[in-house]
Length: 521
Image 1 (cartoon, rainbow, N blue to C red):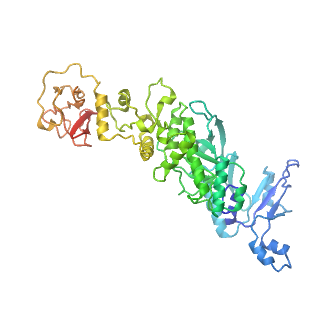
Image 2: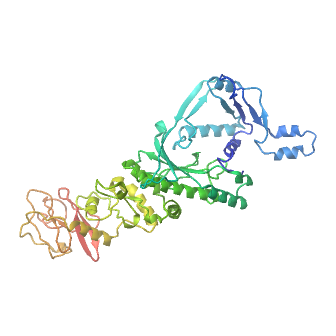
Image 3: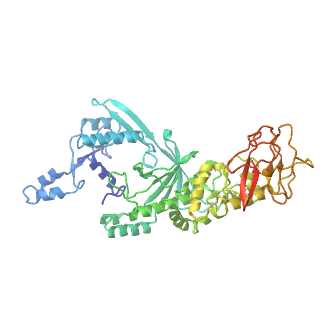
């Protein structure tokens, strides 16, 4: 069986790190309910037991040394006092682990401490448990420390925008004080699983008994609700969290019956079974995101983005490309992954676009050149309501797909002209104004109409020359910055990245071709 976890009881073998003589006590399922562990109670044969069985056989010692653990159960007739006490409290099964030594005791204390104060939710993917109680007792049996973890789950139907059933199921999981999560599950096709297991066995990476795996393998992903303002990488689980260094490639947690080391803290990433299961996780993410794109609630829209925002430095783009062909039957760059601005009355599916034609508008505190103005000008713009950081994560993923949506300076300048062109001129422009000094030369001369500054300290006047589409701003505050002339009454040219403020007016530069153009913010 190797060091696998979650297959045919292999996970139970991990207790060999702390105990080589586990004992199991249970109540009789056909008997009356009562404070008795009167069912099947047993331990496993150890080396000494095997030697006793084979007493007189010249190979007894050799056979006992090679005899695997957990192969031969032996009945237990006496129930320890602690187990009887647990039975009196209503427990019907008790596993007792006599510890190997002080090192094992220290390991148990450490693991229980980590479990009680885990940075990630322990109960998240244990869908057969409703609660987990961690209790430490003193030598006289008194409870010294008690902590209870709870879990409840509510499922909802998984369909795409066309109403088709998808190969994924979704549920909300309430963990009490540990938070609420959306969990999506996808099953691995049995043929793919059998083929991968056969490959691993033929390569000597798995024991032949793995061919007997007949149940389905399930890949799960979980993302927090409500969505975090600053999403962060989650953890890899094998039903329970693995080592802290094993992080998920997206802002959430993933779970699968991966092949792992016996202490559950690491896994070989190139193992055929683990490669298959990571493929299944990518497919589950895409299928779940397709479901969430049909839901109008903004928090679920953000989850749809998180599920496909995989980090770009671990081959994620290729994984998601292959997953898109399986789930959507198309290239990933043609899947509507990006939430975009729409009118309020637009159907839900219009609010998502494929990465190829989307623009990620600069995340600045603009008043004129806003993402909404860009949308009104006919551009397909990523919805800024999802947050700049979340959109940049998705933009990084799309860039790895050779579909960057951050416009280069040339394209951005064209977008700016497109936005500014239809904006109205001020109703009353003076016919004359102060002469432009030499430092204003970068403004194109044709169509510019200088204006006289207001003496009231009002906001700057915008100029939108029809021929060039360039917007400029006049500063009218009188003493706004160190670059001003007598009354700072001319357009101020600033280097890239510097700001010129006059009563909250800012001018920023947009470069196009060899000229410098300035727009008001």
